[in-house]
Length: 67
Image (cartoon, rainbow, N blue to C red; front, side, top):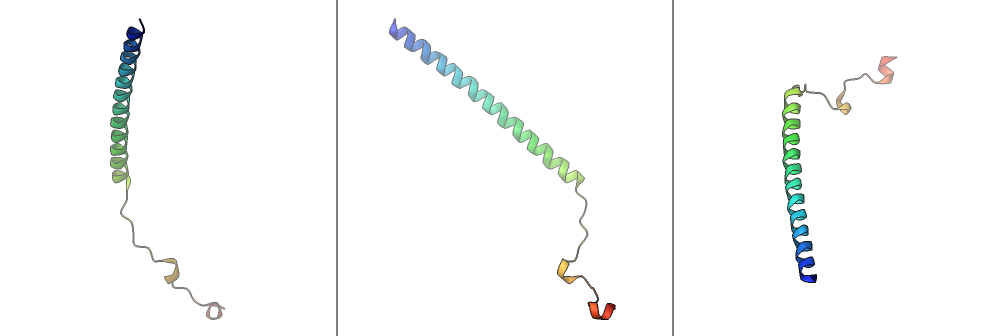
C-alpha cells in the first residue's frame, strides 16, 4: 500500500512539473512576442532626432551686454 501511494505521489508530482514547464514555455513565448511587438512599435513611432546643441553651448549674450 505505501509503495503504491509513493508511486501515485511521484506520478502526480511528475505531471505537475510537466504542466508547469509547459506554462513557463508559453509565458516565455508570450514575453518574446510582446518584446518583438514593442520593438516594432517603437521603431515605427520613432522620428528622426534633430541635432540639438548641448545646454552649455547656447549662444546667449552676457548680462552686462544685454542691459
